[in-house]
Length: 118
Length: 319
Image 1 (cartoon, rainbow over the protein chains, first blue to last red):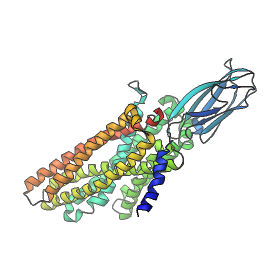
Image 2 (image 1 turned 45 degrees about the horizontal axis):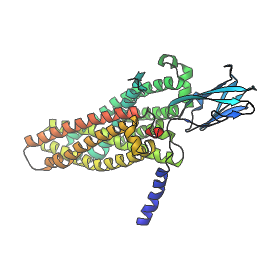
Image 3 (image 1 turned 45 degrees about the vertical axis):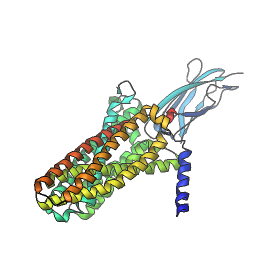
Image 4 (image 1 turned 60 degrees about the vertical axis):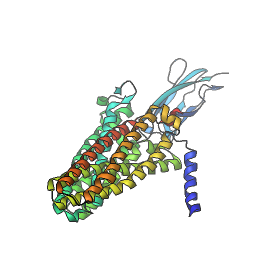
């Protein structure tokens, strides 16, 4: 009886002890990485968030050093991941701006940069 | 609209609080009727009939409030999701995207269908099948709220645990809140009845509801701990964050409700069972009704806090 109760409680405690839950989507990591420098202009920017996103209200825009849009305008969302393709561009600082809606109805936004160059 | 410059969306908080409270009262009154009023009604037919009529009336009123606040909630969410003002977001394009392409919209559609079924059941409340279906539908209406908030977004196994805890938390809160509203109406009806049968009915109903209260408190407490662990995560976050402090305030209000409920159960309710003159019993009845009304007021404050908590970043983000 004691053993069976314990075997039911232990997974629950483990689950709670390893609690990494989040509510509201925040940037987890990105590719190219936030603030990093890459040798060649990437074909796309992908961002992973801490929570599942609503595709209808989640967007990314990418601009180059001159402030011109270099993304194709069509954001792709899958679960907690969002990406956008880029047109070919040169060296310089790229600005990524994102706005996402998580499934718990909360909107978050942010931006970061990455460098392209030797 | 930003309240107090603290990023609080005032209208959304108010609308959520009203919607949660109205939905909880619907579920709670229907459960109270089934598990309390009908179970002890044999002793006082007139008071029991009044309670039955009042239950349906309260359910209708709260369903109306729930529908109106639910509609307003959808419009406010459309504005928040789209980033437009409330006026600009009220277009077919934005509203259809929110309703058809978001989890909130899917839940809203399901709950709208449940509300229609519930209205039909209340209209045909004289049939036992309609009463049973109304009860089941009202449980669905309150349970579905779990998918509109933080619990609906937690992923993986922890997400299942979070959703289950939130659903049972909502059930227990609804049974307590709606039960208190029904208890006040029942005690008032019994007080007006002034017969021995009426007083006996009130006493039996109070003792039965108080006994249910023990189970409710255990469920509220256990599921509340799970929710708090997932969304707050530590004692430190509970103390230093605004989210955590609001949760402490909620717990304090809950503790006051518990004290009043304990006084009702262990002090007032037994007095109704003692043989004594009607005047004394009526006095106890009025005290019970008064205490229950205070509990209802405290529960409404808790729902206001719930309305706010759901719009804030959980404390666990600030660790």
